Image (cartoon, rainbow, N blue to C red; front, side):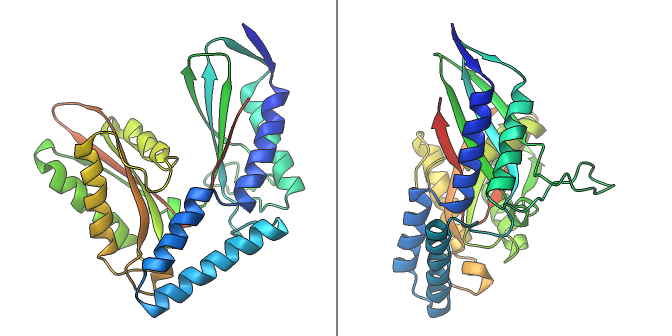
Length: 279
């Protein structure tokens, strides 16, 4: 049994949350570059060029790529052969608190949804824990902006709506969102499970490398169909038109009850920020 002090989580979360806000993952940058090269609408091409200039300057100057530095979503995959000494939630929150102070990150969290008092340090983090084999802890920090989070949707569809119903639900969600989530968007789609599990599957789908495809050819084809239909909407980068409304669509599936077909769409903006490390 490996013993890991919770303080290691604090240091790792601090560094990852700052890194995720300052530097985009290489797959995200490459996907935006590919979209720029393939885009034919001049207005869209110009907007994508400005998006690339923005993330280049943010990385160079170590400043946030977006003024909304996000609500902290932290995913932990904890090996069964490691014991973490200390309070995990407190350790993660301390990491976020330090990142907010050291990285000059905007405090965007209120302690109560109706009283709206700002916590002043972006805490608490939304924490997601899974258990795996081994004695390591995989940490993924996701600063989730709410211009895109607010546009996310969940639907309890009927089984008879099938694949076509899923596609229509996702396309309708993106169409209704319009320019609000700062397109081109990244789509995480969770199908099956329960009301809450479908939403979690959609959020986890956002962590997949952009452009990757589901291991099941049936769902890989569904991802391609959704992406094609969404880009045909013509919303384009920042809503100015063009063929790049979405950069990627990732589907994750769960078993479902015979009477239901849950579908959740978690929308992310074009920066799709996340950073990961194993400790």
